[in-house]
Length: 108
Image (cartoon, rainbow, N blue to C red; front, side, top):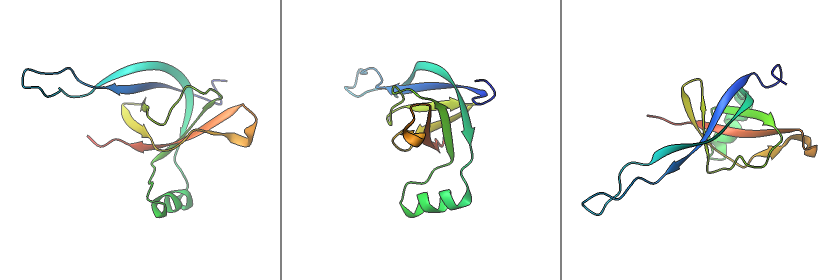
């Protein structure tokens, strides 16, 4: 399993900041949901071009063992890089073995 999914990634969500004295809210804070093993890969130039044409650019694909708790609203921390999940997780081949999800690098 570790050969197929060699990276430990952290899945997190952004939680709305606390209300401040002026009636506004502070910055959103990351809240870790869980960690899991995954394989993070660079898409081919054709995949990047196609995604750009669909106005949904992506920077990476993340592959991981089948599970249903990774959502489009989550974020991924991998090797100090933060990514937003950029699409619906896909069950590769419909076999309930490996999932794939596109990632978009979060700019600082």
